[in-house]
Length: 225
Image (cartoon, rainbow, N blue to C red):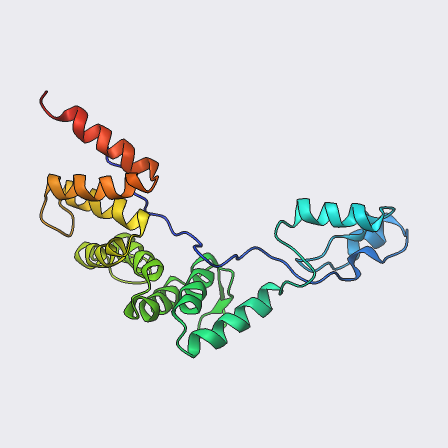
């Protein structure tokens, strides 16, 4: 019988897609191909060769298709990071969790002591998740639980993962409930207890978690009729 877990990091409440102000990406003249290929375009701009000849309305529509979530009054990724960092240092658990997500996904640039740029920084991510989780923030408890379960940024510790999933699950975190059910079913980090597994799967399924529903069906199908 295969029990499904949700062992992947989710962005939760912070939108991390690149976005920013309207800029000069649509203001170049109709030059040569060499000029087009040599221009430097920021991550939140449209290259001029895409927007050349379009009306402002068409440019806006194209931006929405290529850069989902972008808007004139939204911050650039760098501005978002600075805002999160300021709030996180001030103790805001939501910002701390969001900053952890940015470091985990690589949205926030991190370097080694020798100056090497890292693709992502799970250790810094885990540190920010920990600060947020200590304040009782369920999303961070879930994310830190995943870090412990996968051994990312911290030593793998299934007991610690189970404790964190429990704290988040008791606050109604749907994916934590499903993962906790899976841990009870297989006996990882907690004593195996099929009834507790069913209980947590039922809670998650009641909130619409498809994996939990399938897990329940698998358990019930395996029981003697």
